[in-house]
Length: 304
Image (cartoon, rainbow, N blue to C red; front, top):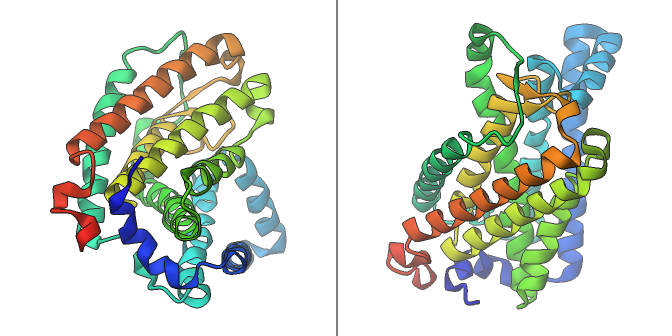
């Protein structure tokens, strides 16, 4: 497959694309992420004391309340800042080059958001035997919604900047094979979502679905030369999973409805995931079509 638009993200990465720099950059990302956790803990100590801060950090692990979920989403700020610093300090490339052209990032984001929202709305017409239960009163849910949207925007943006903006472009600057710069980061992304405590024997099926999403997001990034489409796709997907219908006890504190864990046996989850993956592919195809199937919708991003 040819990805001429990817050059827009890869070109700034080529001058300093040695493997040791990528490793050092990822170490810096981890350090910044941990520092962000420390800063959040420090703020909680100032507000609630050491005992209260420890309790809030423990509650964040389950994220089963609105405030705990917002705090968990806030931890992704460090994940987003890390790649920006790594780009500037380790690779000596502009931090903004991890996003692509700003105007097209916004436009691609909005196109993906609208298409994903529309197709996932149609997906909701087929519940596949899943019966969500009310998690939050509507008034309480609406009161948290503005901050929740910002939190999901930060969380998805941090993951896209790290995996599609930074890792993908730096690996593509070093290696020509998509198996390395597309499949490898997608596999790591999927494995980081392995949750056997929540999904039990079906946890690997969930990993497979997330791996498919990551591959599609990587393709959109390579096809468009920005992380905008992947970010919009990711944001819409996570708004549905975090804010509308969540999984009981798993990042469910801000969800209007939740699905009881008891309903997530392999018998229910397998057909549901199969349908979800089909919808993902439909969303991906619709986004590619809407954006001209390449960066040519902008007069040829690779030539800019």
